[in-house]
Image 1 (cartoon, rainbow, N blue to C red):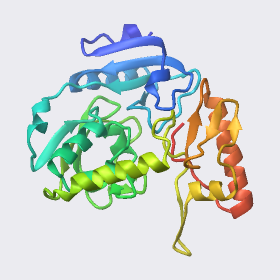
Image 2: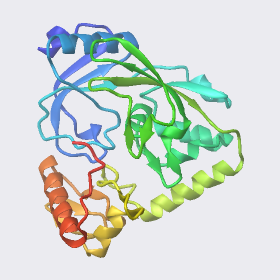
Image 3: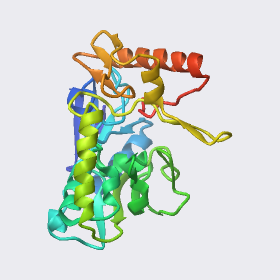
Length: 299
């Protein structure tokens, strides 16, 4: 049905595709994938899907999402071409497609010392996906360097959002409506600083020592819990570690021995395995600490 509905030169439909490589956790998954190569293609795609009452979901690099074994709705992935000469020298601001990788931006920041861009060092995500969840590290959040976001709505209309202090909160945005897809953003930085290169290098080294960056994971499983009454932040990874659950396994899925807020797929793990592990951890943390930890990963 999708192939009949979506007839556009910049829209590619692949049915019942093996989606394992489209998730950083490499879970066994199959489903329909729609690759869109232009803004006009995206407007057409969303308009047609909405008109035919077909739900869909955006898929960036799959770094913060769990793909079910068999997806019932199609995934949309952006693959926009852009002029990469923008990275030949530092600019005051950058207008970039949502499909560009954060690794590309970090490399540029490292080369020229763009202050503020160190906050997304080591995050395996596309720009659009990172903006959607306000991705961040201990150095800060990506929302701090975003000035404008361009989206296409479910009805195929373009929408521009000027970012202000109310646009983001911890791991969340407040401007993407249901069905919207981010296709472009305008970024700034806070000047050039030679020390940024050193900071990026040191932070990457620290993450390599303390997190399973070479394993198949989806990033942090749980959000840290902030208790507003006591103004105390409860770190999910620390709590799981204190309970002695590092290394706990379900089939080929393991709580990382390096960092307890990561789960490692050691081979052929499924969506169901991850959900089982999440349920075990949530129940144990509630029982031991009386705290309900929300998942950071989406499913």
